[in-house]
Length: 320
Image (tube, rainbow, N blue to C red; front, side, top):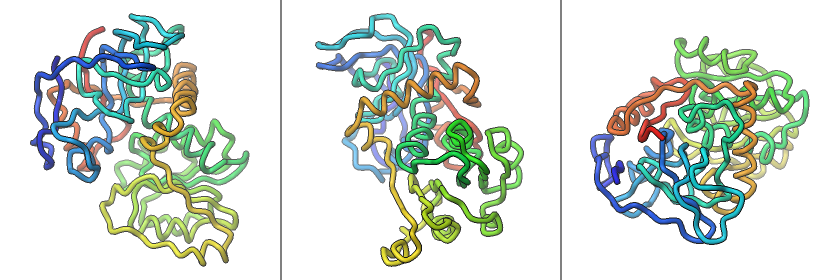
């Protein structure tokens, strides 16, 4: 089968379209004929060697398609069924076929949801619900600040905050051109990141940018506020946070990593994915999707790295 591989760590130019063996599902797994694979910053970290993966490596943390085969012990799913799946634990989504735990699969039967949109949900939309509900434990009426509001996960966090009952929802962006685009994703206000100190205090802050944004975010937390750290898109050095500071100010700092969470709690991650699929199908959650061909994976990576993307890029692989 065809797959994009990472034969060596480096720039987007190292990505290669190869022929690889078709994987077979093991116990508790299914294999999927992949229609679309989401393109994410996580796959850039794999390609750069930030995450230690064996080479050659097939990236791809989320897909949509149709079930190809069921592994031993799988129930409640069927061959040919349209699905969205979170392939983040073992990756492999940039390929014509991928295997994944059945717990991390959401059926699409009965939903008026295209496979292109469905491929954009497993990572970002699932993360949005888990971060706000499971980690930050958002309460109705609370104020929320989200960095990188125009990006893939940022576009979902603002809307998920609304669905979970948030009061005021504010996003930050890195350039003026992204302000209006971010406002379309559930935000009351969108400000430039360097101006966020003027935005007030927040009960919940979600930071995937790092660097100075992380330090400022901690300062903006209200008493009993919670900051969730889930990325370092700025590439800045790690920011030290004093345990005494959070003790004296009644603040909480938590981390969220979708791959680690999905490996430890696959059934819960799967339920969050199903929640995201239902919200998108009902129109409560809007996803802005742009499609590229599988062989354009390097272009997708370059665009994500440049910060020029808004919404979500997906790679078209098979017509299924």
